[in-house]
Image 1 (cartoon, rainbow, N blue to C red):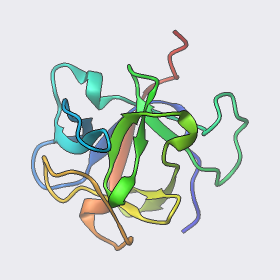
Image 2: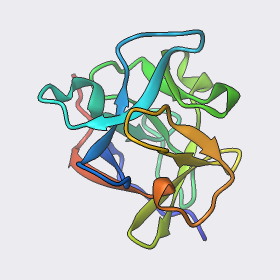
Image 3: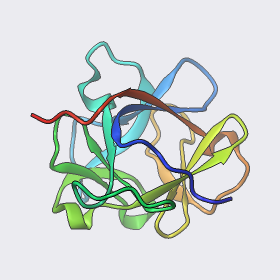
Image 4: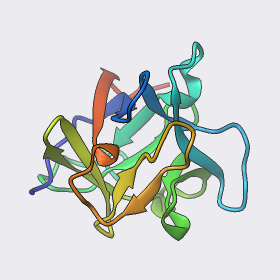
Length: 152
């Protein structure tokens, strides 16, 4: 499928796994490559569950099929990185953040890395892995638009 455009802004990223609503969540502890990114239940404090989806270069003009970067909404220097085909959030230069495209699938979207690997939520609490894309429920996501990118 062809990449679809996504409006840059603040989002909650919902995982399609069995059970209560699960969101893409940055954990509170760091390991070798940064803080592991998992799916978790909606927390009353959404700070680590709201993400900015933006173009790789701030202020970039929209280009159909262009990749996007994703970072924590309240920590603008903490972007998603993909060492060892697992998803982490880390404060590294924006040029080192992983780039993603989005494709429509039945029931939602698929999030693909620049290597063509799909984000997969095995179960709530498991670290997000990047795998060869298959038509699996655990690789389907929903983007909930919360508003424009904060300017402060």
